[in-house]
Length: 368
Image 1: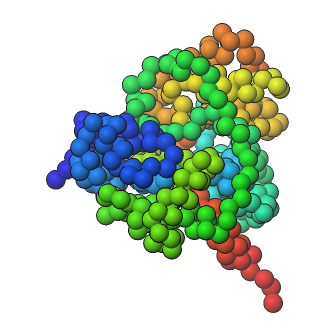
Image 2: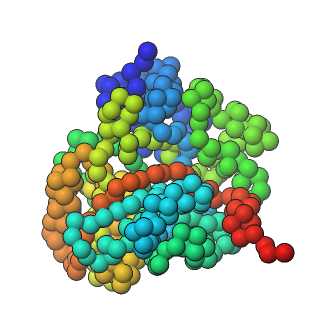
């Protein structure tokens, strides 16, 4: 039986590449992981499939820069305490357009600490994010919500195995470049290829030429599938090919990848957001870094970042190192905070306009 824990030495070598180092669309992703990790391709495929079956890897898929394909936002919800678990379940189980669903708390009572439910929401272009959130609020009994779309992306990539040994203050030589969020339109054929491309891999699909069957799903030849996928990649619609570890729950063997999930907040002066985001986003510990407007509910924070780790104090040391770096760069911060993740579920958000219309019909049945 193959080892399936993430901390097995060979699995670590594979995961250090497969989590977030395969950029864009690649015709032979498992061969690429093998080449870059130095592990034989047959071993890579066998180990990834085994970890996927065991639940150590929760999904293998081609990610998309869905911020360009759908109107998305981080949403904080103020829900009465007695309704919060049911609200969590509804967002996770009944709304395919909600991705991350997390309960968050702060160490002290502070601005926004009564917003305990946090979700990522995406609706296809042409539909209203605000109306979607109003519909959800009515379903779950939310008193208020704050929609925080990304105005810019500085960091996006998981890599938990690679980040386990990172020291506080470790950062890139130059500031992170901001990726602007912009709407793109797709043809019907492009949508077909994209939806086939993004579907999660079953363990038996972890094999050479993994896109051949997907081309069949999209009703195009393999060469046409490659052509469309590579065009979408050139248009900055394709993200990474990734193996996502189960980083919230322990593995079947009781091993945890991470224990704490920290959402860092900073409020910087208006006009300094791109500079501040670049300085924050260059830190290697961060899996996400965005420019989002928190508004008065969160004391006007505008730079948000996420880090994961086994030790809470170690994460606070990473945060302190980022704070010190901002001070050294003369970036004024008027307020900062940490929201800690608790109960958490993650699923890829749907982005298909057709599926959205179907869901909306189910959620808002017409009165005869």
